[in-house]
Every structure is written in structure tokens, then in C-alpha cells.
Length: 333
Length: 266
Image 1 (cartoon, each protein chain N blue to C red):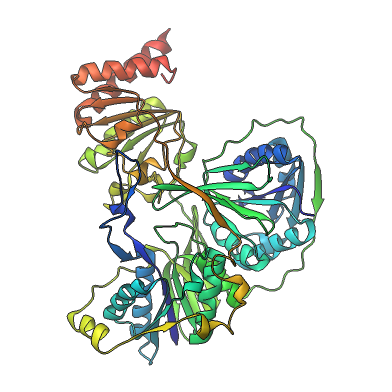
Image 2 (tube, chains in turn brown, yellow):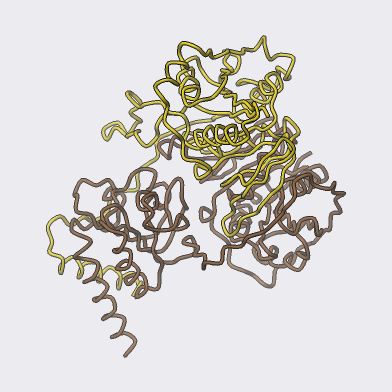
């Protein structure tokens, strides 16, 4: 009899990725509706010390596979480890981050286990009657939403993008159990010849509280400098729609939208962004949306909490100045 | 080396619009294209063939309805040697598990050394079929391939992208690679190529009967799919807030600053 909601805790160099913590938060709701437990699955090398963190963020139990073979991500040993966990514990639900790791690992495992997998879910809930996991995801470039079921195979597997679910607050008093699982690994046939870490400071726009985002309407790559000034006075980051990334004006890791990142900051300022469905899919969960656009019929106004029809090139520098002034006045108090 | 590229014909989702009155998709007149990541895969395969120049061939495989013939002809016109369409009513309604089961069966039938798929399709965005094919075939995979650094008939060296790093990975042949669009910039079809694609080359169709010994018929189509769509709906638009049509830049700045203060952002 399958049971419990399992979450893969993604890690890089021994640091837990935020997406796993977020998934534990979501898993606690699903587990409550099922009357079952949340189990975090921690794979890595010298990783066991992170088990407590999983518990503090909401896991009831942590299954740890600690092995030098799992130091850097490789499909084969990771798929072997996850398969071993599934064979031993028979999970009801298994959630993965929809990252470049989760989206490589989860399909490989689902094909091996012969179960269903639903990619990039934006909503998960339990059907009150059938107790099945309802997995809702965008398709067709974000134009339609589909709710998917996996009735006859277990575990019900899903990937969820970083930033979509909300993590619980850390509770250092929580207690839970930690179990080690020993896995017999074969020597992988794929070999890592080299690991090249990006030396540029990687910004994670999904972590930013405030985002100042530029679209086609900003007119030139230089104008990102102006957006950066505003982001700096606000204490936020800059991001972009796809057009400017494709044009090479800004790095891909700052792209918001269907083919970029999903963000939910407290403030999203859409500057010269028309609001194509693909873009909106990545930012509509933002707490407060301000849109500035010359075109008064731009679809971004349909979802903006505050819409200004006007020229970003004139408004933004003035706004930066005004915000700086207000902040300076408040700091002086 | 026999290089096989798996492609999907997709609607150009950037052309899809919503009907503002009914809030439903306007699908009419939306052009079908070769999925962009897959097209990069075709180009990468053609470049490998040219680089090796040892009699290596490029085969294109697609699963889909008869209309997908157009996509396969386009790949032939780019320079691919042969093309197979896996098409049968029995394949309809397949989810990614069932689709990968069918494509893996097709690959077993056709033969392969290096399999290239796109990372993900723009209509479904799942990125699942490539790794699932590799598992069904029992061959190693590398997804998110950004560059093929070297290749011979024994091994492939690939640059694999992660969010914060790259891996340089060495894979034995046979293996499967899922291509990012950065992998290669697709060439255009040549006039000669288009002529060949329609006059000299053929698209071979493989159906259920051709593949039934290669898969368990219980694992394909709607019935063989572990997942199914329970319901689909058009996304509810988040309601619009306040919009100011006719304000000066200074007024706009004041409105925004007031809101930012009210929300304790500044």
C-alpha cells in the first residue's frame, strides 16, 4: 500500500536548493489532506547534516542516501538512488523541482518505475473524494491550463518550478526521524570530465522581493542601466521579457516567463512590457503589479494592479529620483 | 554512424491568441512548425555528419498524425537522409510515457547509434520524452546539451548546462542527447533540398502493425498512458486594477510613489 508524500531535496555543493524547501511546504498541505506524512529525500555526498533543515521546514521524516557517487549530479546514480527509495518506501506522491536536474531525473525514473509524470505543475491538490493528486499545469505556451490525474500507477509524480510554491517558516523546535538508505551503485558509463562553475555572480530573480522588469518598450539595452538604478534604490533586481534576452540585451537568467523563470515578488514593475501570455505566465503570481506602457491597449494592463499609460523613458528616471528622495527623508527621521 | 533525430510538429504557440470575448484559444490559421529545440537537433546532426564525413547518415523520426509529413519533408530538405513517421490511430491520446514507448519501439526497428531529441516542445513544455526514450532503450542520456565538443563512433563529449554550472560529459555510443536551441543554428532548406525532399526522398510510415513486436500494446495510446487529462480550462485572468490613461509623467510618479509608500515598499 503506497503512502506518504515524498520530496526530492535538490542540492548543489551541499547547499539545499530553495525549490525543495518550497516543495516541502506544499507537501505538508497534501499530506494533511491525505492523512499521511511528508518525507524529504536527501541525496548527496556528506549531506546528512542537512537533514535537520528539512525537518525544520516541515518534513516528518528524511531519507538520506549519502554517498561519494552522488557528489555531482549524474543521471545514472541519481536515478538508481531515487528508484531504490521508491522500491523501498512505495510513496503515494513524489515531487521534484522542475530544474535542469529534476527535469532530467524525474522522467528517467518515471519510465523505469512505469508511472505517470506531470511536468511544471503550478497547482497541486487532493481530490476530497478519490484522494487522487490533481496536478494542474499550463500548456500551449501558457494559454490553457490542464488538470492531470495519474489513477492507476504509483507514485503520482510531478515536477514544480522554483518559485511557484511557498516554503513554510523555519521552525527549529520541530522534530522528525532521519533514516539512512544504502544503495549499491554501478560504475556510471557517463563520465564527468570537467565541472565549470559560472564565475559571474549568478542572480536568482526568483529570490528578489522587488523586480523592475524591462520589455521591448525600453528601446535600448542601455536603458537597463536606468532600470537598475531604480532597482537599486528599491533594493530589488532587474528582470526582462523574452524579447530583450533574445536580442542579447540581458542575460537569460533574468528572463521572466514561460521559457524563463516564474517569479512572485512583492512588487513587479513591468516597464514597456506588453504582457504576452508567455510572459504573464511567469509573473502573474506577483503580490503587486505596476505596469507602465505607452500602448493603452497592452494586455499587461489587464492584470496590473496599477497601470500607467505613459513613456517609461521619461517616467523611470523621475521615479528613481522621487523614490530616493522619499527613502532619504525616511532614513533621516 | 547512424544519427537519429526525433522531432515534433507543433503549433507556433507565439502566434496563438485568446479571443477576448469568449476567452478561448483561436487556433485557426496558427501555422505548424518544427519544434525549435528539435530543429537545433537536426542541424547538430547534419553538422556531425559533415564533420565526420565517413558515410554517417541522419534519420528523422516523428510521431504524429499524417500532417506531420510536412515537418519531415522540411527536415529532408535541410539535408537529412531519410525520414520515418510513426503514425496510427492506436497511438492517439498517448501521454509522455506512452509516446516515449512508441518512439523507442520505432528506434529499435530503425536502428540508431546517436539519438538526438529537442529538450522540450513549445506546446507541451514537458521535456520528458527524451529521457524516457533513453530509459526505454536502456542507453545513457545527457539533457540540456549546449555544445557537442567532440564525437567519434565510440564516444561523444558534450557540454551540459545547469543553472549555475556546466558539466563536460563523456558518453559512450549509443546514447541520447536532448538539445537546447543553443546547440546549433538551423540552416535553411535549399531549393535543391526541397526538390529532393518531395521528388527523390520518401517519408516511410510505420504503424501499429510494424511496431507491435517492439512494445507491449498495453503501454501505448490513451489506454496505455499512466496520466490523463481530467479537465482543461482557459486561465482566469487576474482582474485589472486601476489604470491611469491621461496623466503627466510627474503625476504618474506621484501616483506610483504613493502606492509604494502605502504598501510599505518604501
